[in-house]
Amino acid sequence: MAETNGVFNFEYDENSVIWTINPKIYPLDVVYQAAFVFIDKSYMTLDKNAEGHIMVKLKGKEPLERAGLEVLQGEFANELLSQAVRRKLAKDNKRIRELIVAKALFSAGRPDELNEVMSNLEQPGGSEVPRPWDEATQEEQDELDKLLAEIEEDFEEDPMDIATPWDEKYEEDGKEKKKD
Image (cartoon, rainbow, N blue to C red; front, top):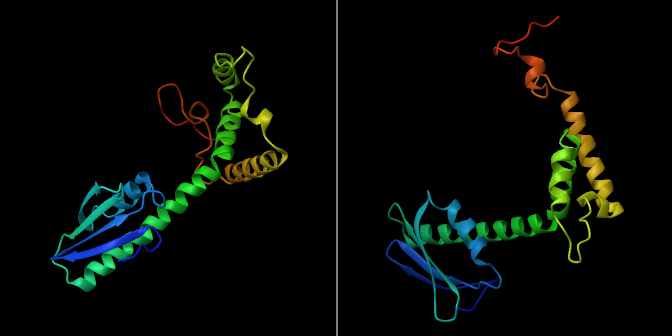
């Protein structure tokens, strides 16, 4: 069978389907992520063939006819695409996630720890490493400010009193402080 979007050479055996995946389209980590979702649905083996393509064998945990195997294989193909998109989004949003974590640590009263970590890092030539948000583009800074404002707004609405620090809620012996 010809290649279709990185997946090709389907073979159906008794209660199993075997096919190959082009790792240039669906890298091994994407295949692993998709495979993990299917652990409860089928038995699975992964291998590589002589051309370097990833070989996938799904075997039904319950006896399946060809139609059931086709559904299983189709679901796996959909999950491959889902995991590939998730990987791309994670890559595209990596910088903003790093900025959020760095700024959150800094604003959470841990500037000394963050400054200590940053001071131990050096760039080639011995120059100091800038704080992550110092090099943020205006677009990244605007997105970061918007996200942090949303988080602060969510903490203002705290009906379960989750955002209150431990020492404000409890006495030294662990008993809850009486509210005035």
